[in-house]
Image 1 (cartoon, rainbow, N blue to C red):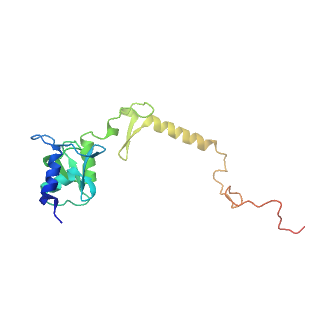
Image 2 (spheres, rainbow, N blue to C red; image 1 turned 90 degrees about the horizontal axis):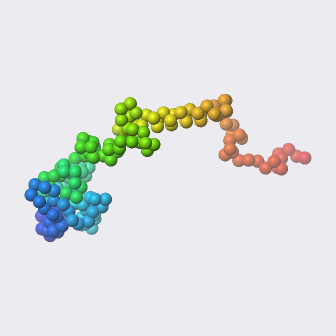
Image 3 (cartoon, rainbow, N blue to C red; image 1 turned 120 degrees about the horizontal axis):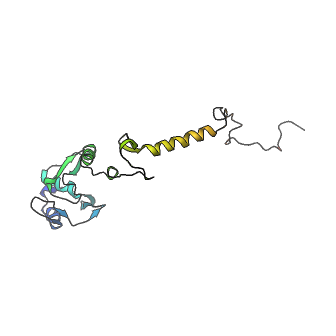
Length: 175
């Protein structure tokens, strides 16, 4: 099977759908999925930047490697703008550049400002302290409303709401 870097027909097809500019992004004018350049290669839809970088490097990357863009243009096919990285490296690059959509939010869903004392970071997430306090207050109120002793008492098999119920007309004792 011919490798993509030796496939002149494939390279001509890719070049025919790429708008090139010196030093700038080479924009893909072919098919896109969610803004990302894709191409049919050997019967499968594959990432066009991944294929272009593979052709430029003349070798296949690791299966876990992603074609990451230094230009942040997912439709760019300029091999000078594409680098191999892991999912974690790509995510760190996005965070460093402020590209993640949740980083740009200034308010929570309830309209509270996400900054200063009202902002808490936990496991990579930005959490509104006012909303967290309200959730905690509602949770404690629900616990306080439960009858004392009943919440902690284990259910006997016959008192479980899921236990099979016996028909009261049937009696085990003879009449």
